[in-house]
Image 1 (cartoon, rainbow, N blue to C red):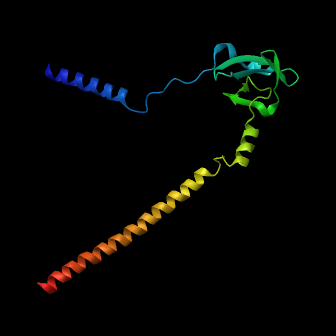
Image 2: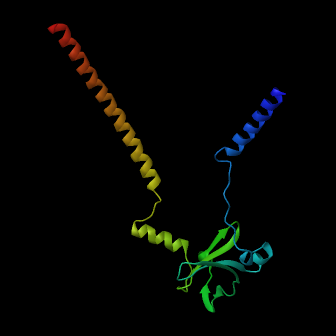
Image 3: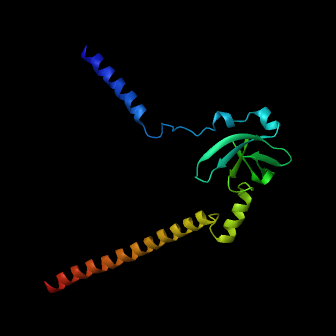
Length: 164
């Protein structure tokens, strides 16, 4: 009777540990609202998901059809050429600020970040190089510090032997 209880407790404990392991839980993934989703047939018929950013920083999604490289958002024609279109889960998506006729362009943003100096293209390489050099300096200083410490200890021992 006691053995059965211990076995049951062990199994319950194993299950709790399995459920409590970090990294097992997956958070909720972002999904485009249903009224703005596009299937394969709609994508073939030049439909696109439009993510509209309003002046008050709210975001709304809608589905629009591209006609003559333009779309109509709030009765205002917006450009919809290939440089403005993103792919989200292999479906076309476009980011349109409500205050501008021209949608967000990743290529223009990239070029402006290069000219402004705010690009992070080589940042990772530079950081790795800097960290590598910092570690090397610490190792060199550690060896020098240890040798100086050994000299001090040898000096104290030699003084103790000679003086006393």
